[in-house]
Image (cartoon, rainbow, N blue to C red; front, side):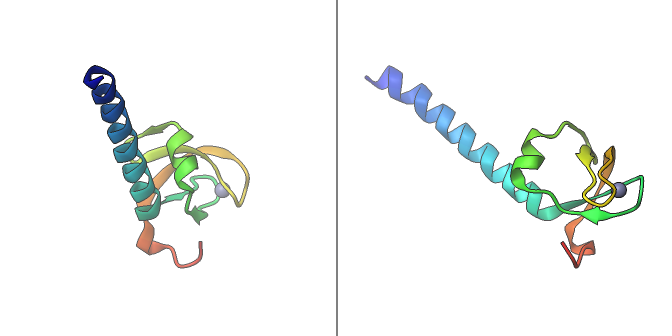
Length: 81
Ligand SMILES: [Zn+2]
């Protein structure tokens, strides 16, 4: 019995930790569109599913609707979401 429970627990813990990291990341960062300069936040789900490099993320800008490698910026810089 234990040899089934232990791997399941490990997977659940990894999934939980990943969820926490992704949600925290989505809350603490925002992105700037290189095309129009618009700054915007993204949801945890968008954060999770979007391809990214360190400090850059492939996102569709909500202002100009173009897909770009958007630059990561601190969330505090944004006052209107
Ligand atoms: Zn834009």
